[in-house]
Length: 114
Length: 193
Image 1 (cartoon, each protein chain N blue to C red):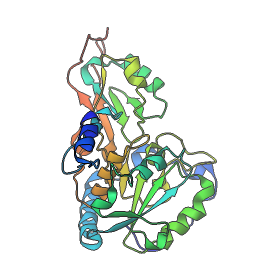
Image 2 (image 1 turned 180 degrees about the vertical axis):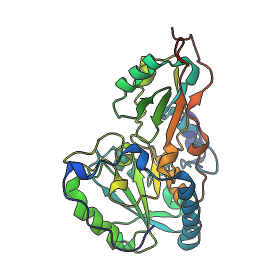
Image 3 (image 1 turned 135 degrees about the vertical axis):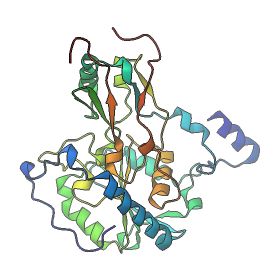
Image 4 (image 1 turned 180 degrees about the horizontal axis):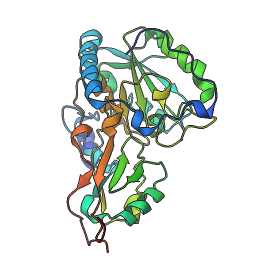
């Protein structure tokens, strides 16, 4: 944002150069989370599913099903488990197939279960 | 990007629109269809494309971001995109909101009024089926009523995300999400107990 402001002052041009060049303000955008696959067990996954306000998360056995399309990047899962959930930093999320937005994240294997 | 008339939307009836998660189509055949579609768009739309926005019950955050596309910082006209208030002049329909049932007829009329070939872009988490589940008042996702070609996630999608979505729709930028897993191998801090 600062870079953009200084460039505007210096040259009088404020228009972003995206997509030819990356936009400096993109780093400030809220983005969907990335989950640390090996750090999340079933119990934690269930808690994340519970805190998600937009039904973007679901647990199917040992997989966390993350619907990026439903995610509002509110950050509640990150608050609940900051050691295992980080912002992805990806804002270019558009797809031509809805199925591509549904991600399956393997969970930590449960000890003492088959 | 279909041409004929749409079927009349279902009556307000919760049982008629369950639309389970698994029913979203086979990615392989959809990929082929999408590739053919993008080729056709690139050849037919060339360098000028007119956008009609359709608000089907959104909170107006998406509209705010769409409006910013025309502001000097993003200036989408430099890329050959223009907004039009008339669906008959539009090539691309940007649909926001969770598709409220009260809007069935208006949405169908807008879609039918657009000349073919036409592209439908579902914009924002509501339109993608995230925020509102289907009930007596909303369909819950745009693709239950209109044939959607491009999905732009975000709540709201930032103008940069919208620009990326529009450029994906005309095949001038590549999609990024299919290669991403949204899972990382290591935890950043301490391990959970």
